[in-house]
Every structure is written in C-alpha cells, then in structure tokens.
Amino acid sequence: MIKLFVGLGNPGPEYEATRHNAGFWWVDELARELKANLVFERSYQARMARVNIHGQTVWLLEPQTFMNLSGRSVAALARFYKIPPEEILVVHDELDIVPGQAKLKFGGSHAGHNGLRDIHAQLGTDDYWRLRIGIGHPGVKSEVVNWVLKKPAPEQRTAIEECVTRTLKAFPALIAGEMEKATLIVHTHKAPRPKPPRPEGT
Image 1 (cartoon, rainbow, N blue to C red):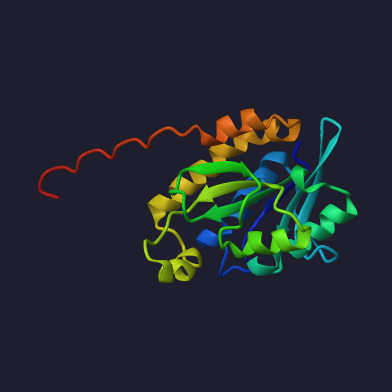
Image 2 (cartoon, helix red, strand yellow; image 1 turned 135 degrees about the vertical axis):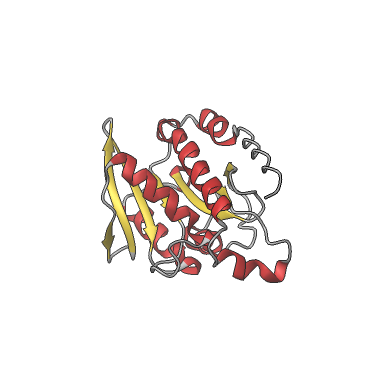
C-alpha cells in the first residue's frame, strides 16, 4: 500500500504553471480533496501534510529543493518514518506520454528525469512506484529543457488537469494496496471529444 505520495516540481511562482510541475499539481489537488494543509517543514526541505485515513497515516510531500535534489526530501522523510520504497508513489511529468494520459509503474530506469535520478540515488534503489503524468514531447531532444520549463498551451493544460482529476480516483485503491485496480483506473482513458467543425466563412 502507498503511504507516501510525492509530487515533483520546482518551487517558486515562476515555475508554478510549467510542465515540470505536473507532480505538484497532482499532490495539490489531492491535498484539496483530503482537506489537508501542505506546510513547509525545514527538516525535510519540503511542503508536507500528514493525513489519517481509516486509521492509516498517509504523507503528502512536495520537495522544495528544486527538481534535481528532490531525493533529499523523499529519503529524509522515508527514513524518519520507516517507509519502505515500495510504499512510496512519486508523481512526475513524463515526456513520452501525451497530455491527458498517464501511466502507473513500479521500478525501472529514471529515463533521464533529474528528479527521479536523485530519488534513485538517495533511496539507493529504483523499487518505488511512479505515476507518470503525460506532458508530451517537443519533438527535438535539444528543446526538452525549454519545453519542461514552459507553460503548456491552454488545451494541453486542460488535458493535463483532466488527467489529474481522473487519476486521483485511484487514490483509495493506492492506499489499500490494490495496485492492479489502481493501474486499471489510471490507464483507462476515454478518447477526447472531437472539436465541432468551424462554421464556414470563419
């Protein structure tokens, strides 16, 4: 079962609406649903909340160290509360998935994602869960850094927000340890409604 939900992003208002902060958007929305207040904790260099659900303690965490040092916060909290890696879910932006879709997976490579790279290093393992929120790819590798640090186009932002809302429905399954059920919820995606044809002469 998942006890620690980690959203990845960069701190500060200039990064708030950028693609790289999709993990923050997910945890922010979860906090709203749980009526939890994320508060900065200096000892973990993160915004965090502790919530009791049906007698089970669940932590929400948003590292405030900048993306490439995210592992410091995750490892510090996991060590203190003795949360094993397999009970951690890291929510992050994913270039290889289109906006509006998401994938749940356990373990595997960091695939060049700097937040995951540091979490791998700090935990000493890749045996933790990831929720990969699609942000799409710019099509050219040299443009990736600019892409993740820019705001998505309005229709992409809407697709990502709808994806966040939909994947949050997996939360009860995640905390119950029903990972197959959670995966089914996350991976089930209805095709977007086609746009109505534009009127002639416009």
